[in-house]
Length: 166
Image (tube, rainbow, N blue to C red):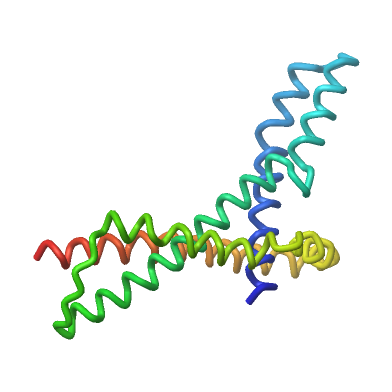
């Protein structure tokens, strides 16, 4: 489970780098073409963006991963509440309180999955050694997992809200 979560985190980081390669860096190259200071700016932006310890892309990937863990827990809780509601066991939980209360356990859970003792750095070294084919397969699996978690988290919340209003 920890390995799979770190693989998703790795692919979120790589997606951020890919977006930079496609959109940001070509713009910088056009702006600073044949300019010595411009090359230094591009190098500085790459260092700040691609730093695996505390760079911009790893921070954004981490925020997205924490949101995915939150959505996983939210979807799980909402699924249980929907099942309980269907068998006529009424649990009156305020939606605002539920959304706020789930933030703390999801943060703790995500922290121990990836950030505890910077374990993700060891996994990143391991994942970098994958073949291109294996990276593509796991990238696709990670993408499907991310899409599933977004739909499951928000879908279960919307379904529970609809069922509560009826």
